Image: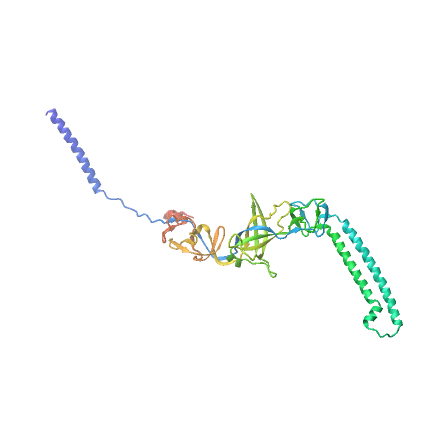
Length: 404
């Protein structure tokens, strides 16, 4: 056999082996049985839910307000003169207690006036005494004449009764003038009309002042007011103080850096007009001791504060976190079949982190508080508890028997 024939035979054998292998593999693949397939259970969207219930809720009306003085006056003297003394507290920020002296004007002229009127009073009393004696003498003389045909007027003139009445009136006028002079002398010392703080002052020692001079602007320190702007619809939920019952309680909070100033207050009245900055009603909240105790941060006039006013309680309401509110008035609910329901609710009250719902939800409903990328009604939902219970394998019979 030639070499050429041997090479052809080797190539034929090699090709035959390859073809046989391919054929065998094809037959094996065709005749192979498919493995059994287990159907994967349908899983819902994982969500976080809370269970809700109805109850009576005490609610607060949250609003903004401005601190204003409860009492404020422009202090003016009642008599004029030169300022000869003024208190060291008569400066912006100075504080006075009620009836504490603020300043004094030169009282020498008023003292002289008092002495002059005192002399007039003494003289009028002497004149009255003398006139009484003259009247007694005139009566005795009249009676000594016996019965005389005269009118009542003639009899009164003869007995000096008009002169006696004139002396009485002169004494009364002198005493009144003396009281007025003593009152003016007392007014030369200007005193604080109430517990007050000085906002501005306009006088100096030695200045000549009159009854038209504004000495200082004072504000009362016993209490401040807060003008609070609230929606007109919220007025029916606030109780205004009357003679029979107190007003709604309020909490006033001012944040100063890292510090917080908090005071308690009471709604005392409603202002008759709307807030100039918008269609909001205004109420006044009374705050006692706004400056606090020694060492406390004071509540300052003109401050913008947060006010929480106690409103009328709401019965049979459900508190829903704001994170559960969708599009302002919708809520996602996971029903008993673990399907999504989109419900429209009626909101009776809003709070910073929650709303009170009076319609649209039922007690023990499961409200979804997590996000759902594409919410579709009746889509399947699941919770983390459902997932963990599904993944826990049931113990085998021997293992179950071995469990104590």
